[in-house]
Image (cartoon, rainbow, N blue to C red; front, side):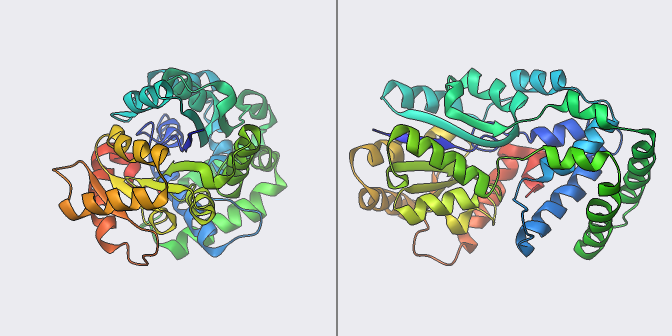
Amino acid sequence: MNLICFDLEGPLAPQDNAYELMKLFPNGDKIFQVISRYDDLLTLEGKENYEPGDTLALIVPFLAYHGIREEQIGIMGQRAALTPGASELVSKLRTHGWQVFCASTSYEQYAMGITQRLGIPTQNAACTSFPLNKISQLLSQDDFTLLEQMEKQITNLSSMVDDDIKKLLDAFYWQQLPRTKSGKMVTKVKPIGGSRKVKALEHFAVKTGEPLSHWVAVGDSITDFKMLQAVDNAGGLAISFNANEYALPYSTMSLASTRLDDLWVILETWSKGNRSTVEKIVKEKEEIGGEGNRDHFHWLAGSNDITEPLKIHSKIRRLVRKEAAKLG
């Protein structure tokens, strides 16, 4: 049985849905960039009970304050662009008998729109439950005042200095917000990132009766590194696609390309062989080098140096994901 689990934002769809939602109101892009960086900082420091991707919980009060509705998120999922080659690759995988899964940090209204368009069965998708319309009813006038003040403070940050971001948002999220009804909003949303994404994959593994050593996982960012690490450590195939510095070190191999379906040759090899056969073909392709902005393969297992792969991944990540490329 051939099994693959994709992250959604990056491998399957280029935009960052949460970022696009925040851009629906004034200064929302700057606010999201600051909170996204704060998410990286909390992850890197190993904050207890915090998972990469919990940005999607941290922004909930701001979405509710500006009246964003679940219906808007669903429409984005129906209209969003797909990563070039994603539809073709998923279709080819299914035609050749692969079971295709998706573990996504994205809000369910957006993620389900994308996965349904790609033909990934609903039961094969894990994403972030997000009853926004119901949660928004928790807002009170006191919350409006606090959120308005915080938006001004974030917007007025003179630069994206980590220490300034950490000091401002630590006080907001762990001291001020918990004293309001808005604080409950944050605790009600549990994004599928980090170890929660690993648990989702393990659930799929139990359901199919296949251990992680038989799986392929494809990711690109900080929310995926634990999933990639789990699959690689188990002897499966963990693939970074147009990835950043948070995902590459935990991957078996990587591909930087403007088309996802360039992965097909590797997946076909995996389906007929094992890690060693994939290693051989990846190293052959690595020796040849990519062509333009496609087919840049790297074998990463056993290597501690991602300097060269990161250069090409960063370049092509910007081409494919545009604004979303600068987010962790």
